[in-house]
Image 1 (cartoon, rainbow, N blue to C red):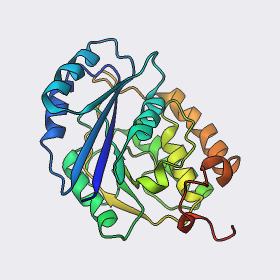
Image 2 (spheres, helix red, strand yellow; image 1 turned 120 degrees about the horizontal axis):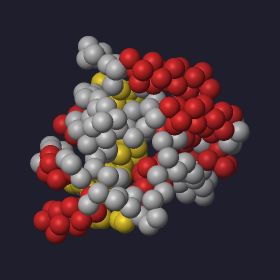
Image 3 (cartoon, rainbow, N blue to C red; image 1 turned 60 degrees about the vertical axis):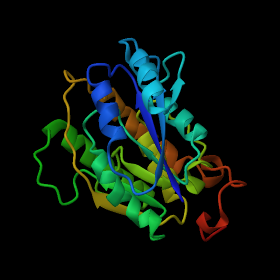
Image 4 (cartoon, rainbow, N blue to C red; image 1 turned 135 degrees about the vertical axis):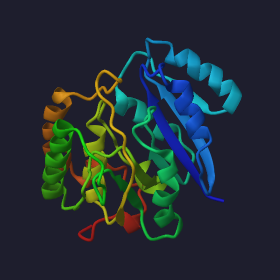
Length: 249
């Protein structure tokens, strides 16, 4: 039976963290799951909540010290994962874990190697103007630089076969991890799917952490990881199955 690993980075999410964890634990999934929470040195009691819930639910809790950023937490979670498939899950209510089974299906059926959950594909939900246009702009640039056409490059919901994800030499400490994932996938022969998902955006007052500085940094990451990083620097090729190698190798 295949297994799905969910990597959940956590930083200062105490207000709704217990409710989020219980929602995740009770969400549907057609295969076995492994839960890896990575607390990035929260200062609001999130770590204590996770320690208590770990005893109840038996998930893995990794504790980062000092605070290093979302990307660093995600990279550590990926390194510790043991599932056949891996997905990143935010520790809030923006993404609906009930969407995961439909995103997982193309992987289980052998039709895809990476599946993106798009917040903008076939969706009629009203968006927040600033974040909508920033995300669309960055996605367009990513499409032009990577050669992969997506509607939502910045989505959190990216499901990978572990065999293509774990050999990645990921470097981004903060939100640039989303750009890096896509740039590296584009260097391979991976089959990429994109399916619609639900999305419930929160505001900065509700705890949203990404800001305009991360948008500017994303422009630098787009150039760096798409044009200045070759496949030899993006992957440990000794661990990457040859079926993913580009045709010119």
